[in-house]
Structure formats: C-alpha cells, structure tokens
Image (cartoon, rainbow over all chains, first blue to last red; front, side, top):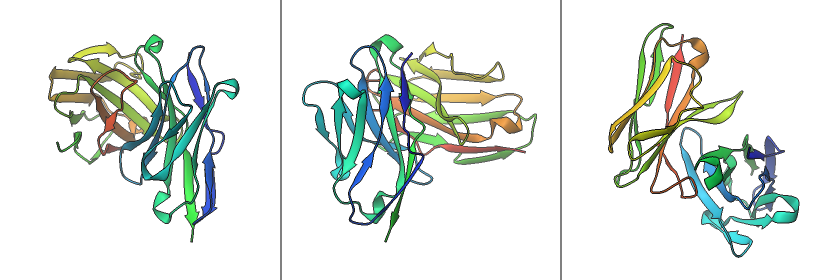
Length: 114
Length: 114
C-alpha cells in the first residue's frame, strides 16, 4: 500500500528565510506526487505536482519541489518565505494501481515569524 | 465556475440525529471525493465516485455513513445516527480525471456532534 510521511508536524521560519518541507513516500513504482496547501478555514489548493520528466517542478506562489527516487522523497522548497505562506502543507501520492486514490501525509503546519 | 460548493459550512447537532452534508462539484468533472479531516487521523478518503457511480467506499468508517450521487452535479454524505466521534471537517473534492489529476476542494463542512 502506498503511504506518505511528513516528518515535521510544525515548522517555524522567519519571514524572508528559506523553507524546506520534507516528504517521504512508500510505493513500488513511480508514483504521482503532489503538494497541497490549506489555509485556515479553507479547503486544500494544489501547489504543484510531479508525474514524470524533469525531477524539479515549479509550482504556484514561488514554490518548487524535487523528486528524488533514490531517497523516495519529494521535498517542497521556497527561497524566501512570506508571512502569507503560513498554512498547513500536505504531501500526497497517487497511482493508477491504487485505484486512483490520493493518499495524504499528516501535514506540516508552517508558522512565519515577522 | 464557482468551484466546489459545500453546504452547510457549519453544522451543530446532537448525538443520534441524522446529518446530511451536500456537495456540488465543478461542472464537467467526472470524479467526486469525500474526505474527513481530524486532528487525530488527518485527512482520510471516505469514498469516491466516477461518473456518479461509487468506486471505492472502503474508507467509510461504518454503516452509519452513506453517500450518494444521484446526478453529475450533486452528492450527499449522510450520517445516521450521528455520534460525537463523527465531529470533524468534511471535504468534498472533484477532479476532471483520476487521482493523478488535480483535485479541487470545497471549503468544507465543520461538523460538531454534541
């Protein structure tokens, strides 16, 4: 069964600092990988996704993520964090073999210090 | 398009009462997903539909939960009878394709069962 682990439950960074959120997945073949963001009181919004090809993918709001097959990781990065980035971030994995279902990690709550 | 619309946004009910949550997906989307989000269990897929047909309901916690999709523009999630442990935020999402496509989430229904 596919699974996703986000090791960091909470992260606090200063505004303007760089950010990296970790995500590890467990799946036999190449999965479809996603990062979603959830602002307080809102639903989830897609930041970026990886299916194949270039392992560094660009998303909205200045985010990027890198797929590393050897490490089974798909970490999310941003070079300079803005206060509006404070939210909860979810990594997710899907595959056709898993019946088209999306499996989410536990989420990482990001706080931004002024 | 207005996006995925869920109603009500908040629901407070007493244990034993029937609760019905509603969802209107984005027009043209063939897939509809129901999720539940709690602090303890994170984001869980309850059931999903393809072309109005339930495909996988293995995430439905027990027989008290049921979901229907009578047409392409409407779905309901019903809990009967409700219990305090059902308190959570319930999200509906729709997608134009399988789970490898972006899922568009509604704002959620926050359910409190007293």
